[in-house]
Image (tube, rainbow, N blue to C red; front, side, top):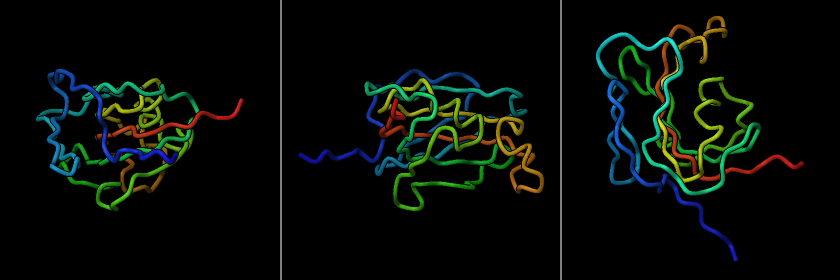
Length: 149
């Protein structure tokens, strides 16, 4: 039997955390993100919007996710699997540190919002257009595949 992977997080909704970006979910599941007023945090901030009930993402896992990323400075979308029309698949070891922190330890089915200061994002990538930007991602964790032992 072939399983069908959902295209959006299905976990139980959690209470919002004050001071974090707010997220509205469209009918198709695509999030829109509103960045709060004020200075960006200087450490990685993580909030679980929906608590999933699936397998836990482990270090180095290959994950299947939907995500939208916006710049803290102006709220503009710089990357979105939703806009491309398909979930993205990658290893947690192949993304910026703040994104890795947002995935590892979370349950499949969860939706998280993460705020990533430059030093945990593209700060070390000299000349990268987002080098000095605090990033905000909403990530729907759809599946994980553990590394072979």
